Image 1 (spheres, one colour):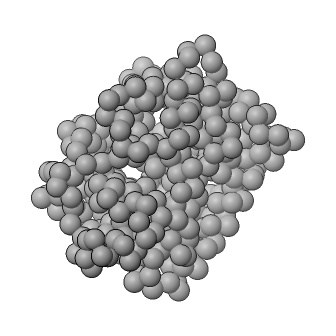
Image 2 (tube, rainbow, N blue to C red):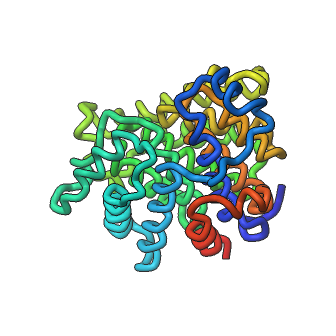
Length: 340
């Protein structure tokens, strides 16, 4: 596929797909597959709920997107320029009356600490958490045009680190943004896992000091390189499982059985990618498969939607679905900005 990110409106497609997956998976989260089938019927016929309400996954994706937009309006994207608007957006989300969608404990705990502006963000981060809240919101980092690899990786890891400081959360967020970027640029899905494995190996011992500061010192590792390598090694392990699953697993079985339930960042990345790779040219079917899973269905499906939308563009989604999604105007505003 050779369409450019502008031709196909990859940003609008990815953000819309993320929100649609979130809304489709919201009612199925915390249910096993037999229960989902009993409530909603055959998974290939799942309908978008009315109204199409999203979770904190989409809310925090928009927060990251707005933070990036503010930072880049002020000049070249740099750590100190991004940290403040991201922090402000996360605190605003934390205090919003709309923050009532079963948000994760790590995000709540860290954002409550981020309210204290005198506290370094590294001291608010939950250093032991690698929950999927780190990377279910990172897609905007992969969609913003004009960033260097260093800026994109640093921004992806910084937005994770504000709440989820575990090295696997940092690495999985970096990989998720990388996957979104590659697909938006037209990378062939058949080679995507190999590209991500190569990227992980290249970056395995690279700690982004400028973006992360002394975060590593809070984890008990001897060096920053040892700290970050732990995260990349866990991601490399799950990417190996993903590579096997794409070849051997039936699309009719629960994807979580192959690549994990998605409660952690690396498993959410792998299972979201698995559902996308099962149905590269059938994005709605991919969303339905992701929503009919025994794990963190909304986060898995929102990542699946981001990958499919980045690859196929805005036309991937039925108008009747896209027009009904909550926060539609906010999603379109950011998408149009980055597609322009």
